[in-house]
Length: 315
Ligand code: GTP
Ligand code: MG
Image 1 (tube, rainbow, N blue to C red):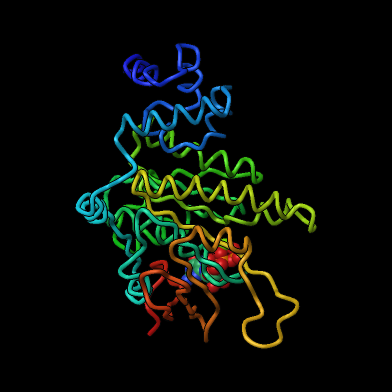
Image 2: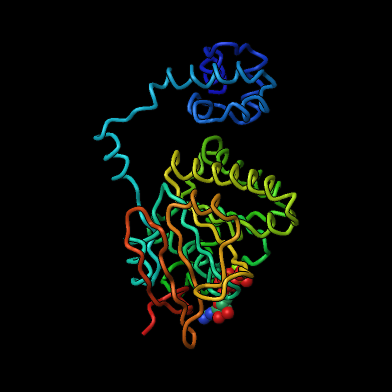
């Protein structure tokens, strides 16, 4: 198997046995993985010049005959896209029926607004949609709680042990580690053939926010976040995965009217997220979810509660 793969990659211009080996070691084991890589990534992986990397990528694309899809192919692809439903029908409807595969859904809001609770709920509910599918949970704030998963699973009539077995939790200790873990998810799918269908990054921005402080570091932070978002988007798109990320808000010091908070990460995170949900606390134990700037759905608001089932409609 590995030999065949190597031979396929060796057909690319400028790729001899040694380069092929380096590419394989770095996880570029299919023509597709090279075709969708950036020149910088190939340079890093194979130690070739940027021009050589570009040639490889273009050749891989030609060999795969990719780039343009007919409307019909596109429609077929869209039909494969599935949605994960939560126990809150209102919340699902806000998103057009659930959290969509092939896209990034970002939840942003203040402390305690329910971002992590939604993540836990999704990690359980994936099993309802597709038994045996795998969740990857990148935990940056040490807030993953298996006990809570157990409770949500039981309340939704699922075997908690089975649910827990299908969640792969990885703690990210800093932003570089977080980026690396996201890249490793591709390996889980392509090399280990794991049916990863949900990827959660909770929180997407906390490490970046903590590590890059001060004006001088903003450009570097945004550049790294951008790269990270592209990794996530690629996983979503190429492998038909639901990607759910959480994001904090910060106070805007100069706003006196309207909403005094804004999401971390600015345009980079906002533009790369397909669906963005703004969460805030409502009356009593309720939470308000608002969909913002969606290309295909109306800006709308709904109310849910955090319960033993995870999240449910507010009554
Ligand atoms: P930060 O990560 O701090 O920014 O907040 P967050 O948006 O992730 O908030 P999170 O999802 O952790 O929501 C916390 C709230 O969920 C708590 O204030 C509780 O009201 C509720 N909650 C947490 N655990 C449980 C639970 O086991 N059962 C129920 N019913 N509610 C819970
Ligand atoms: Mg949280």
